[in-house]
Every structure is written in C-alpha cells, then in structure tokens.
Image (cartoon, rainbow, N blue to C red; front, side):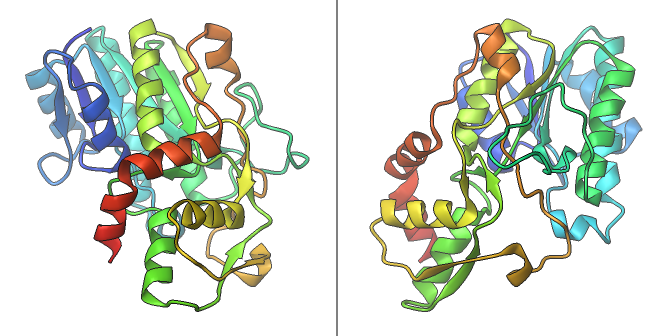
Length: 291
C-alpha cells in the first residue's frame, strides 16, 4: 500500500489519519486554503499531480447548525466527494469517504442500532448534504468505501469534550445543562483512523458503520470525561427541548458496525475503554490547551 492522499488533513480526523498512515510511502495531505477540492478543475489538477492510489476524504463542512443557513455546505459535502469519485473511477484509484449518522432520522426504538442497510432519512441540511455526497460517490464509481461515524472527538480541533472541559475550567462550580435524551456512540478520531486503515488494507468496498461499541447520552459522556480527567463538575441532565438548537438532532444515533464485523476488520472497542485511552494519551496536553 502506497501513495495515499488525506484530504482535510488539518482537521481532527485528518490529523489522526496522517499519524496512522505515517509509515506509508508517498503519503500526502492537503487542505484549505492550499486547494479547494469542491472546485472540479482544482480537484482534478491536484489529483493529477499527486496521482494517489488511495484517497481518504476527511474534508467536510461539519458545522451542523450553520449548514441550515449556509448553502456552501453542499459544495464541501456533496460536490467535493463527487469530484473525488469521478477522478477515482477514471484513474483506477480507491476512495474512502467519511460520512455521518445524520443521514438517518434517528427515530428507531431507543437502543436499537442502525445498520448499514437501513434506509436513510436525514432531518437536517447537514444530513441531506452528506447523504448527497454518499450517493454522488456511488453514482460515479464502485471503487469506494463509505464510513459513517458519530459523536467524534479527538486531540485536534474543536469538539464536545473540549468544550465541556473549557466551560468547566472557566466557570468553576457553575451549573451546566447537558442533553440527556440523545443517545449515541462516542468515537475517538484516532480509532476511526485505524478503522480507515483496516478498510484500506483490505480494499473493502461498500458502506460501513464506524463507531465505538456501546452507547450513552451527551450527559453521560461529559460526566465520564471530566471524571476521567479528575476535574469536579456540575453538569445537570436536561432534555433536548430545554437546550434548543437550530438543527434537529437524531434522538437515537447508535450505529452497529455490522459490515466491518462481517468482513473481520472491525477495530473498535467499548466507548469507555476508548475514552480512557484518549485521556491517558492526550488528557494532559488538552488540559494545558484549554487552560
């Protein structure tokens, strides 16, 4: 395996992918503002120059609430992957694309996980744009793997865990409401990068779910993280109605990694185990960063 291109290389997942694939000859990473892959001409010119055997697309517009009013999210989430897939098919490359639980309505009975063959029904503009990206890829090529993930956190960039830590450190003793009626599988971006590598090495095709095992609520996750960091907190569980957002969030975001287990390439463990490893590896540096 060689000549792998990571798009969105400066982001949370892209940074971890560069780490996980660091021993691969010909590894390259690109991101804005150097090149805008949602522009077809720029995309093709860049890919023609690098000529990767495998493309790992971590580039996306992930500001979920902003997507509701910013139509440019469709350029990043639908047009960009279409261009990558078109080039992939013409050049006998292989595309690994990262998608999201937001392609589902999240209305399955609580604790019943979505599997890859369930029908998508996004509730939000973000979910609709990401689903359009999935379908654009499938329309252009068979040489792809799509990995849907959820509740991503990592050492790089912004995420829910860092936000809760920062708020707590800046406001000792203050009460913070945290949603306790949305359920999902918190996923460490580094483990997702390892799953991407497993898919790449197997040249496994199709759609995969890629989240940690087990599930919890946002309130559970916030408490588990701060407890693991040995930082006192004052989180109070609340309903989604008590914490309104511009975007309707899926109530049940639990995904089952059925396809990767069937292929024998699932690398994920329980979310609490993964969270503990994340804290052990990055807790001290994140604490310094947020202080």
